[in-house]
Image (cartoon, rainbow, N blue to C red; front, side, top):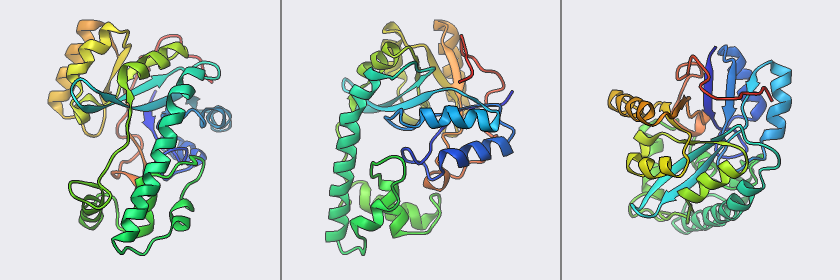
Length: 272
């Protein structure tokens, strides 16, 4: 068993189509995958169909872009084994998707004013299933440099970070609302990459509210994170999940099959 429960497609901010993800997963001998596109469940129906075509177990999932308002930091919440129409998640996330699209269009206009040769049409051509514009789509127009390269990162930071012309962010949903929406739609709520976002403190509160698991395997986690997560999971009886956080060329270069779980620690798993 080779399990990757953290992948992104063109339904959000990944560069690979859903079918391309299944093809790459098959080539990497993955047996179980979950595509957790940001703030949307639009990919679930196609994912279930492709699971049959490629004989790969597909776990319906989502990654909700949330916020810990008490500590003033981002927190991402993963939801797995989602059931039915996911009406609670849709109601929570649709305004977030609208805000993201409108905000990215604003960022695009600031970049145009700064003198960069880019049009809205060029950026929106990069939008596929998502119907939402992301910073990655803008960057895809501006440069062919690899995400991890100095050229890409220098340009990205000069535009979107610190005092960059497009340095601004959207209002995210409350992490506790994200947790409740996932649970209300029959899902398993998992705290995403706490080492990456330093969200260990809020984890204690989330556990009291019904958190089911915590992400262990992730490219940004180090040995200290592994030890801390395993200790917390054992103490509170949490599931441990993991995956590559694969975004294709829109993210850090990651080979599928490298960041995997060897067992599916998920109760009542049903192959979709």
